[in-house]
Length: 168
Image 1 (cartoon, rainbow, N blue to C red):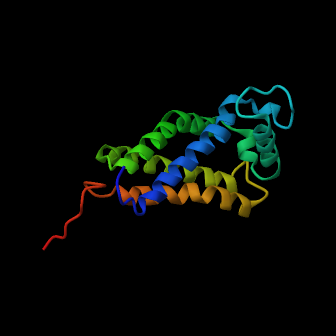
Image 2 (cartoon, rainbow, N blue to C red):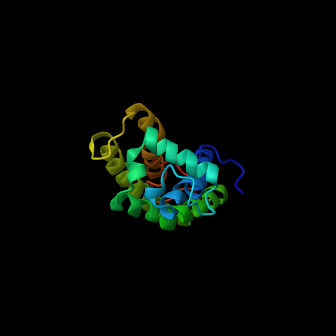
Image 3 (cartoon, rainbow, N blue to C red):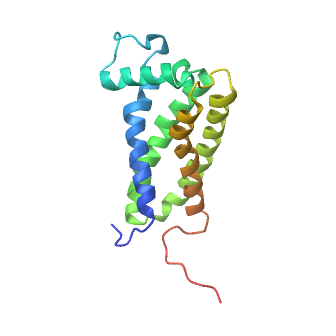
């Protein structure tokens, strides 16, 4: 592990938080039929029942898009589980150890996330499944729209971790 992580703690923390949310909450979107929202049965073994019921309540009160889960949104969840979850694991390791190989995956991750979040936020506010609580949705989704900009900025050069030298 590198001695001075500096602002990279932000990236490590964000990846660990996103990984946790994906495994606990977003997995529900690919494992459960939205027709079962609000019902106790049938439930699968993951995520825990309390999480499933809390997500159902969240959808009912604030997030009809997540509750309806149109096909395009479901595809976003499958992409998250198959592409972003491995990225979060790899990026956590790479930011801790200063591995340059994470630069291109970071550019891909950031671009993909910014594109997805732009589409999701437009749907959340103006689409068929617009939220009845825009400030709640803005507060919960905006960090996932802004953080990828920092990842993109962090990976902008030819190197991410090598010592930077000033040009004369």
